[in-house]
Image (cartoon, rainbow, N blue to C red):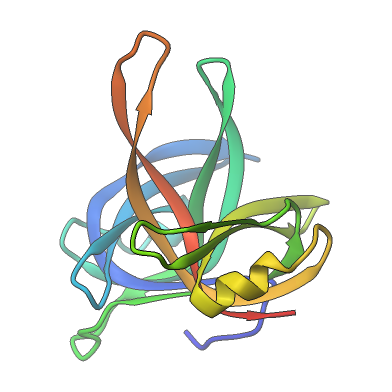
Length: 204
């Protein structure tokens, strides 16, 4: 799987954490979702949801513990939960394969080419590091768009913070998962997982 400059490109290599389960049906085609664990250099593992068509699994269904490489795109959609819309983020697999024995290192590379669709939000981490939240809209076929949350650090945060809604942006990074706590109307605290692209490089 060679890297190409596309408007929305995702390349992952990791270990199947959860085997595919039925997700949805579209135009007569069934899609399944599996969880792929991709390790960072720090050792922390991002657990990434990957949606795969039944057509891609005709030869073999991915199993827990199997190492696979996935090539595809980040896809987003809104899901109503408790009367509110929640942004759901997945990696849509265009192809996948079993990783070779020599591919011992995990991969996590995202390339996006789109437009800033919300005002950037700059803040400072508890350790004093500059952070900037960016929402990038990437167009795809059939007049649809994916709205992808991104987070930039340090110099990239300063650069992203100067951008305006509608500005063209190209970036390279990785998709990451993080847990956060959400309190419901009854006061109960639930642990949820958020997904975002951690930016390594920004271009305009």
